[in-house]
Length: 284
Image (cartoon, rainbow, N blue to C red; front, side, top):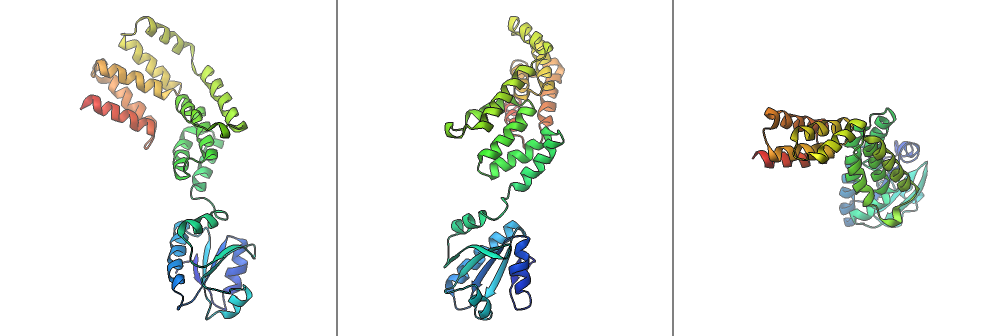
């Protein structure tokens, strides 16, 4: 037994069921030894409680032993489950329920598993460290099933890091019905950043490369400038295109620049993984 899975008795009933519900939700499970559905339901509740690691308390009440409490809650059949918040029952159900239904009900009152990642990312963004915020936001987006508000937060961080092409892809994937004011704001920010990203050095090198597209040295200089501007996909694509023509270009310096650029993106970054695979296919 843990501090978030508790057997209720006369001495702890008020403290757990009422007092603790002012701090976090308390899920009260009324059960009995003779109740077969109770034996199906309780392991599910315990599994979910262990996943949330104390975000709520699972209070197990043996209705035969704690008949007075069961009567106070108006329990008429077993199993019966109540959700307590601020000293009051706010939700519940009677009878065994599928895990999906239980999670859906509890989800209304519990922090989402990805909330901690979002909080971490928002603290980093508030401190101006948008690059460090990308990894927790990417994970939160995946864990949330690509929830729209999490996606928008991730897009904002991508834009601030000048990962403009990746931000563009995500915004292009937003359904028309979801293109609200937040979406429009991100679109506008993306265009502003896109206009501001190109320095005179980049524009000059792009013009040189346009007139001499086979010049690998100019292409490498442009890739370095792209990296400095945070335009990582453009940088990586140019570096890979150089290595496709000359895998040992600049005595291996281009390959090292590519590896350094990939490493700068951080472990687990999908863009890094994409270009690691491209480099591997070139080398092997």
